[in-house]
Length: 83
Image (cartoon, rainbow, N blue to C red; front, top):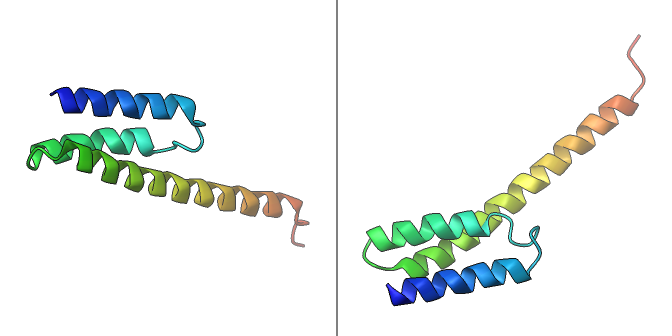
């Protein structure tokens, strides 16, 4: 329990220091991974680390997809209408 409290406080302090955009997905992934790791055999810290990495990757992927979609929509608005 003490280790989990230290890990959680460290995670919160790191998230508050770094930019929100850099931590996108990390907090949610860390929480889910920590819970899954705890249930899977008391490996909360490893689960939180893996969840943070996966959550950050998925958030970055979603951000790129949203930017690409926005770019395509902007290009479609700029194109002249077909006759």
